[in-house]
Length: 175
Image 1 (cartoon, rainbow, N blue to C red):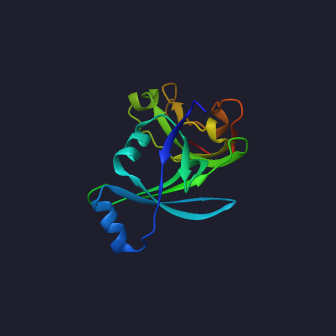
Image 2: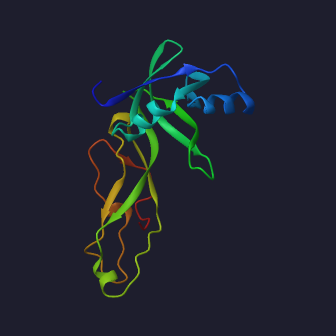
C-alpha cells in the first residue's frame, strides 16, 4: 500500500523498569502492539526509526511483529515529563477494510472579524470523534474563523468533511 510507513518492531523480552531503562539507554523505545483480535505484544523500536515515522505524513503503519505483517495506527505516545523524550508508545492493529473510531484535533485558522473588533477567540471543543477507514483519517480538522464576528460561533454541523468520514461528536456542539 502506498500510504503507509513500514515499522520494524523487535519483540521485547525484558519487562519491568530496569530492563526498559537499559533499552532506552541503547536508543530503543519500548511499546506495546494490540488489536481487537490479538493479545498485547511488547516490542522495542529504534528511536531514530520512530522519529522518521512520526515525521512522515502517514497515519497507517505497516508493522512486522514476530514475523507477522500487520497494519497499525498510533494510539498513544507517552513523553518524559522533564526531557519531553518519547518513553513509550501504543500501536493499535487495524484492518484496512473496516472503519475505526478515532479522535482528531481541531485547529482554528485565520483571524476573525470579532477578534479584530476587540473580542477574544475561545475554543471550547479541542477534538472531534470520527469514524472512517484507517487510511482516511485526517491529520486535523481545520476550521476557518475569518468570517466570525462578535458573539458568533461555529458548530460541528457547520464543518465539512470528506466522503467516508462520519462525525460522531454531537452536531450542535460549539467548536
